[in-house]
Image (tube, rainbow, N blue to C red; front, side, top):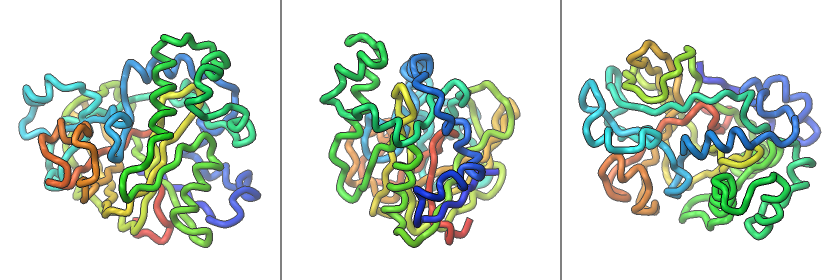
Length: 306
């Protein structure tokens, strides 16, 4: 099942220790074991995964709706990591589509630092030279480029109707969610869950049950970004979005309880956004949906019908 954890919107700082045991979704990334991001960044740079929103460079995402039993020639020529996008009309029982689900080992991923430790590192592109020295990356390395890209994305002005923040700690992530939902409201987190241990990253999946809409008036999506420690690009949009839980079965027997979000208004998105390339559509011409990888989070009000 898709993981769900509840949070109280008020007095989060003092209640954080008591809430950590129920954050089973985040336990593996909460443990502050120092900065161990080099191997993870190497893999993330090669894999080029992540995604959501109207910024094309954040989306090294994935998915074109498959009309046949096997990926089309159009898909064969595309980066498989882009294959997460689909249209609202594809979201129906029995639909088969080619989807990329990155399989990452959380124990080898960078951990979310406590706020007091994260604030020791200046999260600023102006301090990139200093940061590269701290993390022992050379100026021309792929890791340096990944850090520069992440900092630039975090510092870029939001698109019209978007509120965004890059969270470098669990506390800062919860602060941002609280600012969206209101101080007196509670909120929960949902994420994609892999029910089997398949090592296949890209294959055809079939929707096994009627997709279930999560009736959320607001949502906050948080996406992992390549960095030496855990950084989440979190954002909320004023435009209408729909959240779904989707039961998927892969060709090799893989089972995934996936979270998908459909953005109904893409008129403000960059024409270069990866989804338009994958789906062969233009900004504002159609809703764009996408699946979330397992290490991305979607926050919703707890009053939501799940």
